[in-house]
Structure formats: structure tokens, C-alpha cells
Image (cartoon, rainbow, N blue to C red; front, top):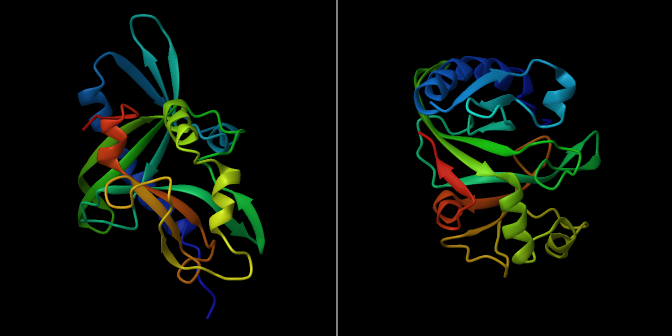
Length: 204
């Protein structure tokens, strides 16, 4: 039985989640106005929202990433996509994709729902993308360096410890070769680690 892609159902849930997120942005981002991006080309470039600072008009491109696979769970980590497969071809994930125009990731975690698509609360952590890339580069965590952990002939599945990170309180790799159609390879990072290093800030 082939693994299924959940793209359509994810899209429906994301649209519902946006209602809650917009409420949070209005509540916590007093110094900013925001608008959602509907242009597909911009969305493909990693821009879901534009934040505009009211005092000076400076804009920031925001890419929302939501843990919709883990409803009603309070996970301490987030998965940053390194690679995935499409039609059997290996593609670069969004983290190190230089074509992305993202300034900040809005990581949506601890998503709670009373019904499958009725969201009641969540946490939002804003991650400065350039600061994250700089931190990873200092740790020698780059797209090319991580390839040493992946053996093409062997479909690794699950947690992969790497020497560049403490797997207990910083992060590790995770390969989903057996349970997801896209077979993503993700860099799993602890949210506390991102905050402690000044890369991220909790919004809500």
C-alpha cells in the first residue's frame, strides 16, 4: 500500500488555523501590522505573511510552519526540512533553500483543538532565519556537511544522532522513510535551544 500525501487535508486545516493565528498576531504584535499573502509565487518563495513595523514601514517576510501532525501535544522540538522526495527525485528542503525569501519562521506548536478543525490555542515562536543559518554554519551544520550521515543505499528511518549537536538538549536528524510519502529528512531542533542562543523569541 503506497504512502499517502496529506497535502489537501493539511491545506484545509491550515486555513482554519489561520483564524486563530491572526487573532494572536493582532493581540501580541502591537508595533506591527500584518497581511496574508495569497500570491502563489510569493508563497513558494517562503512568504505566508508580511509584517510591517508601524513606526518606520520596514517589512519582514514570514513563513508559517505548523505542527499539524501533532494536535493536542506539547512538543519541545521543531522539524526543519533538509530534503524530501518528489516522484522519486530527491529535492532540497526549505531550510537551506537559497531561493526562499523568508526573514522569519513562525513556528506554530502546541496546537490544541476541541474538534479536528476547530483550533482553540497554540504557541508561536518567531525564528530569525539568518541568525539560525549563521548558528548552524558555526556548528558546521550545512547542507553538504550533513550528507555524510546519509547512506544512499540504506534507507535509514528514525533518529540519527550527529556530532555537531547534543541530541538531548540541542537537536538531531530524523528520517521519515517508512511512514511518509515524501520521505523527508529533517533537522530536529529544541525550541529552548533556539531561544537560549538568541535565534528565536516566543511570541505567544
